Length: 87
Image 1 (spheres, one colour):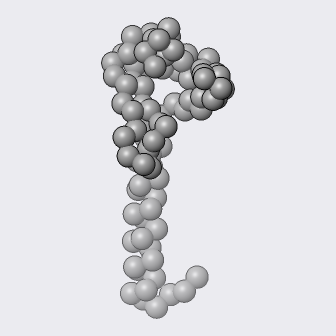
Image 2 (cartoon, helix red, strand yellow):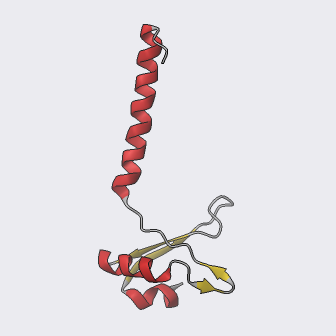
């Protein structure tokens, strides 16, 4: 992993999935955001040991937006139930 991803910049850490649900996944954390973007652009679809890499750029703000959206939907459902509104 360090050989493949290290070509694009300094790596802070690599975390491998260690549960049955996360088996086959890894998080590669770069020191510089531009190195991460460069690696994502170049390694997505790269063939390693007859398997193709799927490389995604993680954006924390999008993950938190989804969590907040789920909370808002839950709040809305409770309010609708409280006032007897069905949509």
